[in-house]
Image (cartoon, rainbow, N blue to C red; front, side):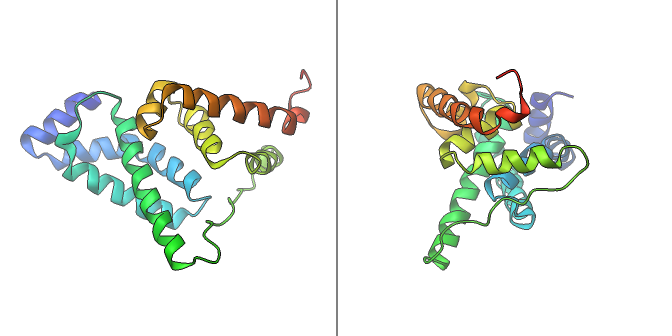
Length: 177
């Protein structure tokens, strides 16, 4: 079944199984996005993912199909993360930052992952967010614009600036540059 069919079934029949299918289909994207936002804090990301899906279930009738369902979910996830970040900043005003990203070590790609994690630190938070949504979540410029409430030109600017900053930092991984 398509997302649209599952949404209709969940709305019309209050079918939790249909919504569960949507959760299973999109939970990886939501968790990956939240792990990026929380700098690798898996516990916080999983808590926020759960909050995201609970919110989506309660407000499913607010989804009108103006964007992909996963984009709508990522928007909810982003809002929950922003609320959590504000709460963290209020609790520890001396150091309002979230922890540094945790880089998983794996064979072959661990050096690239480490270099990428280090290079991403040179981007502004908005550039990091745009780069993540475009390259990791495979969202279009328009979807990112809708998700974050940014003008389309702002999305393109953050992506262009992010790529421009990353290019020299990761040039050793692409000898053609």
